[in-house]
Length: 162
Image 1 (cartoon, rainbow, N blue to C red):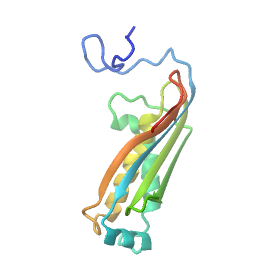
Image 2 (cartoon, one colour):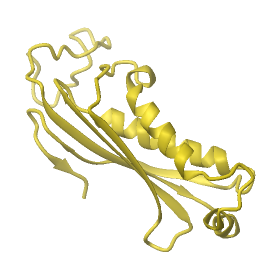
Image 3 (spheres, rainbow, N blue to C red):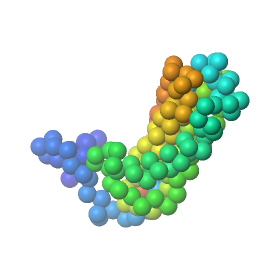
């Protein structure tokens, strides 16, 4: 048995291991993550106008986020593959006036382990897709702030970022 605060993915010899979740009860788990894509002012104005060489950028980004969330265990070595019940990805202009887009990814599953990594991988992939779709206009774009916003379910219960 591990002590509180110990790494769950390391064995007694400090080797990486996949955590055994077989004895845990399956519960509804949900997580939401975000990433920000920031643009130079001139490129952002063009992005908002919709006149881009590759066409619309939101739908490809949303689909990339959904697809990536479903494959999070292929991105993260010790992540359990999960049958997801739902994945939603939203892309919206930043509300604080900065020139950029906010990606939010929410993942839900009835499982023995959480879906935080699925939500974060989904947000990251959608942000990377936005960058790819706009890089010809804005090589100076940046992806920032990939983070977990909230999670619920499981033994540790609900958590929300401050």
